Image 1 (cartoon, rainbow, N blue to C red):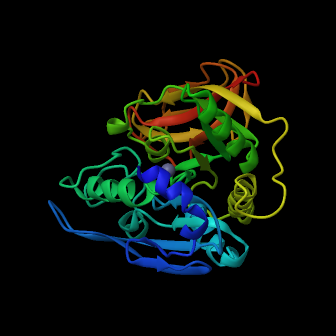
Image 2: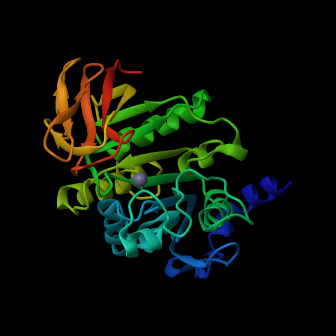
Length: 343
Ligand SMILES: [Zn+2]
C-alpha cells in the first residue's frame, strides 16, 4: 500500500522536506545536524549528518565515511564533497555521514570505537539496547539505510595500513542488483575491484554497512583510498570524483558517467598473518605485483634476529601491507589480491 502511494506521489514528494536526525532540508536546501545516539550501557554519542535535498525528484543516495575514524582520506573526501553538492543541480537526495566513529577520530584509535572496542563496520544491523557501536549501527540502519535507495561506504588504509585504492563489488546472486552494483564500481572509477561473493545473506546478521543495504535490496558498494594516516590529494580527489560520477550514473547529476573500461578484477584475497611478535619490516610497497612465494616482509625479535618471513601464498597485487613496525603474533602482515578474469 505504502509503495503505491509513494510511487504515485513521487513527483510532488520532492516538495516535502527530508529529515535525518536533527537535519531537515527542504527541496533545494542543504541542512546539517546530528544523529543522536542516546546513552545506554555506555555513553551517548552524536554522529554528524548532512542532508542535501535536490530541487528535482530522484533517488536517495547515502554516503557514509569514518566508521573507522582514522581512515582520514575517506573522511576528508566527504568533507570536501559537502560544498560541492549544489541542491539546485541534484535530482534526489544525498545523505552524508562524514564521520561515524567520532571517538576513534578524536582519540586517534584505529580499527575500533574506543568506547566499546568494537569495529563500527561489523555489528550491523545493530541493536537498540547494545553497546555504543551497536546502538549507533541500529540508528544508521533505521535512519539512513532503510531510507536510502543506494549507498556508498568509504574506507581506506588505517593508521597502520599501507593501502592502494580499490573498491568492492558485492556479488549477491541477485542478477539485477549485481548489475547495478557492478556499474556503480565501474562508475566510481577505482581501477582495482574486489569481487566479494562470500557475504552474509541474512539481513538480520548483515555485519557490514554496505551488506546491510544490499541485503535490504538497496544497491551498495564499498570503496577504499588513503593509507597510514595520510590525506594525499590524489586519494581525496579519487573519492570525490568517483562519488560525483556515480551520481551521474544514477541520474542524480546531469552529464554522462565515465566508466572504467578495463579494471583489474580481484577474485580472492590472501591474508598473510605473522607467526611471531616483534618488529615488522616490509619489503614491498602497496600496489606491488608479487609472484607466488615472494618474500614481502619479515619480523625480527626485539634484538634484531629474524623470527618470521612473510611470503606471498599466490601471485597477485599487494592491496595493503602493514605500515608500522609494531607486529603482534596473529596480526595481518599484508593482503594479496589474486587477479580474476572479467566477471
Ligand atoms: Zn575501514
